[in-house]
Length: 603
Figure 1 (cartoon, rainbow, N blue to C red):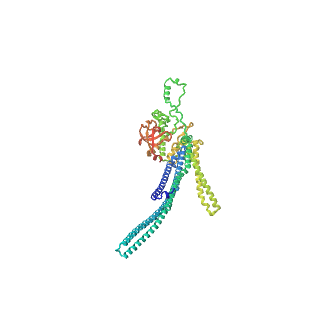
Figure 2: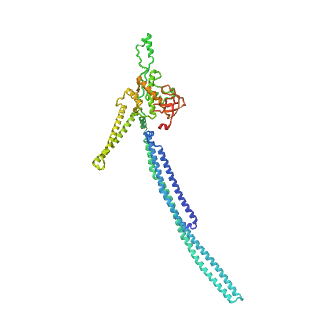
Figure 3: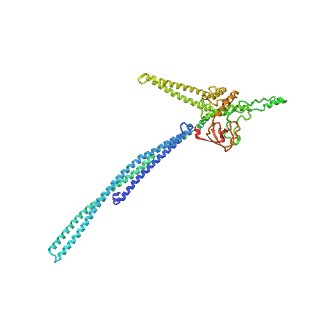
């Protein structure tokens, strides 16, 4: 099977076919090129997607990724990043192993095709030239034969005519001979050219054209083979990354299997455990004592009361307060299982509103400075250094974290001191390397930093020991005095809620302040509160249920009402809201749907 023998007369069609083959090859190159662009775009989108959901450093999201489920999600994002890298590898390998090679091969193929068809056209032109020579020789031979025939007929006519002179006859005879000789020469020339043409034609159709067409056939077959090899390479490039992609997917599966729901639950406890004990029973406050005394003084019914022990539930006892309560803040709401319909007026304080007016007044007067301190913190004031604004368990964690950080800083400074000391020793042994005295200032500075850090560490360790019960807690009077002095000396503010002290059973108790102290606190509070701007709104909320705020510090809301949020729930079940500049207070978080403004929350 050869194009030279089978397609000897299809020169033009072969030229079209080979051009179509080159176009097909260029189409394959374009296809692979677009595939590489798709792979790069896909890899870029995967990387952007992985980056988009990575936790931002030094943000709240980063703290949330301590849970095993979040760690598994991070591992999945990292694996997807590696997965995207494999698609980039596919693009690079296809570009280098297919596109570049095929583009170079197409250029070589075009040059080879051009050379082969140039030789073919040259052979065609040569055979056409030979054909023209043969036709010209043939026409000349035909013309000479006709003229020789006419000259012979004229000679015979003259020879038969008796009236013609002998000289004319001889002249006609000579002319006939000349014409006859010319015809013979034309015949010989025609015969020679014919033989030459036949030889050239035989060479053309049996040697030149078959050789040229054979080269074109081989060129076309190499092109076809090259397309097949490119297709194999195309598949192999994909197959090479399959094991790595499989490892990425295995990594995702492994990350999913590493999720431990029990561990996550324990982390939630560690993150939000306050350390408070559940509130104890509320003591019964007997308001019938005055009535009993009146009856015993004015009647003979004392005998009825004999044998009955007196109920000593003083109306102003040191009642146990609920956890998380600031004096101006209502108690926490009931458990989430209780529906709002079952609690028509919302959460109620353990102390009912039947307390003596003097006790309520004193409580109000002593609680307002705390509002000022708390609001100051919310507006960006300094956080207490000992984290005493946090529940016990969270405070212990923060203090422990601070101690660990200080220990690392101390170790770092000590390493730096050791390095400076060694350098000083080297300078002492080799004075040409440097002056040892030049390091004394730096060494003294590092030693001073170490001493400061140690003092800081001791301070935080003392607070940590106090939280853990290793050191006795400060007395209530000391706490109150500290709070009083703090209001007068802002730089030494420690905590605005230190007047809460743990009782033996874990609940919190309060003692009435002296009248002079109450007056001072109330006066300071009034002076500072008047100059203070209201808290900025950090979002809005919509009331899901009607709540009647009957306790101090609460505010009534109607179902469907929209209000401003000025303080979000800190874990005690209450959210602080504002209706207008003069009306603000707390409502149960479960009674409202909160929508916080992200920018305000971040700030």
